[in-house]
Structures are given as structure tokens and as C-alpha cells.
Length: 303
Image 1 (tube, helix red, strand yellow):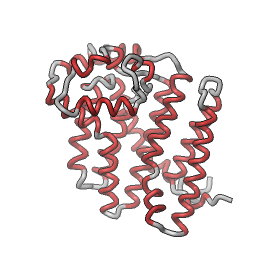
Image 2 (tube, rainbow, N blue to C red):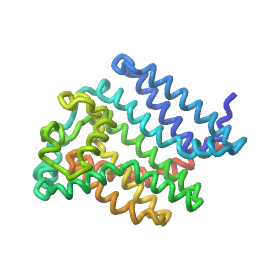
Image 3 (cartoon, rainbow, N blue to C red):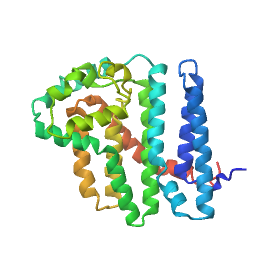
Image 4 (cartoon, one colour):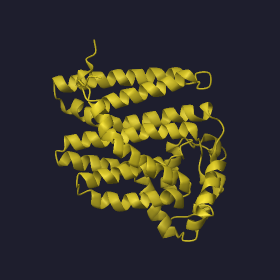
């Protein structure tokens, strides 16, 4: 019998998160054709987490210790791609037009159009690098926390990061949208209309691949519906706040790159202004409630 007493709040959060994703896939199984794969994958990963934590607690081996620390990172990508298989089938009506209308009410125009006025190849190159650093900033902070032997801080960072992702998935399901690079601009002409210097086309290609965009002609159909809220804004603010909270030296890198990243979400035409506002508000809610939720998921806590 699997011993779940070894599970940390982070592990329990991940198992609950995968369970809820599986429930949604099952409820909408007539639309989500990959529901069996999603459910079986999440079940296998959940069992794997329990086995991993048991193995790590009984015999501390470098490999099991490494996996117990870092498995959440690939899990983020796994659950993110599961949402790709679920969002559009469950809610096939993109709501970009609503987000565009809200932007024009709040800002008087499209925020991307305002930032187009200051666009230069050099600025575009810098901001595309910032945007591409999204995942890198997590590793920078995580490694810094471990170098300072702050295991508790490291576990809390991953907890609040994953908590942020699970909450953002709710937004994707309720408000599916593909973003201004598809709706307000010609996606195929992006490198021509908003050129960088050297790395911009490469980084754009990598980001497109991560979002399952394998064909320019069918880009809008293939794109992941992950605009609202802006996960890039939410998770970057969570990373910045954690770096400041634990007074990490890496904050000197994370803060300026993170600010550039958030600015890039609109400048690079990935998000609407209202996406960024929603992501910022959600990060505040997640950070404010994370300690309470963590306490509820502590091992041995009685209901």
C-alpha cells in the first residue's frame, strides 16, 4: 500500500491539481478525445510522486533527491500541454473580441498599438530575450535558494508557482483567447513588422513550438488558448516576490529581467493589456493565500 504520509504540501497540491484536471477531462470526455490518455498519465504521475517521495525518505540517493526537488518543473509543462488538449474542445469559442473591447475601454486603444510607436530592433531583441527567460528565471531563483541551503524556501517557491499555474488554467477554460499577434496583426509577417536583431526569430520559433504552432498557415487554429490571465505576468511576479521575500542575490537579475518580461507580453504582441492586469491580480491572490493553503496540505493535518 502506498504511504502518502511522506508527501509534502507541494506533492499534495500537484496530485490534487492533476486529479482535478482529470475530473474535468472526464466530465467533458465527449469533447476531449484524449481524456483517457490525460487521466492515465495523471494517475501514473501521481503514483510516481508517492513512490519517489517514499524512496527519497528511506534512502537519500543523489538521483532521487534531485528528482524529488525538481520534478515539478517538467510537471508544469505536462499539465500545460494537457490544457492544450482540453481548452479548445471544451470551449471552442475564442473570446479575443471581448478582451480587445475591454482593452479599448480601459486604455482608449489597443495597448500594442501604443507600444508600436516606440518599437526598435534593439528594444525588440532585448524584450524578446526577456520574454524567453520565463522558465530560466525559475531555475535561477531555485538554484540560488538551494545554494543558500534554503530547502523550505525552495519548496515554497515551487508550491506557489504551481498553485499559480493551476489557478491560471481556470482562466484559460473560461476565457479562451489566442492573443493580438493573431487577431490584431498578421502573424506570418511578425518578423518583418516587428524585427529584432539576431536572436528574435530563433526565440520566437522556440516559443511557437512550445505552444504547438507547427504551421504558419494554421497558426491561429493550432495556438494554445492561454492568454487570459497572462501566466507570464502572474508567474513572473510570483518569482520576483519570492526572490525579494527571501532576500536572494539573484533578485538583481530576476527583477530587471522580470519587469522587461512583463512589458514584453504586450510589446511583443503576445497578450492584451487586460490579460496582464488579470495576471497581476491573480498573482496577488495566490501569494496572499499560499501560506494558508500550504498549511491545509501539511502532512498529518486533521480536517
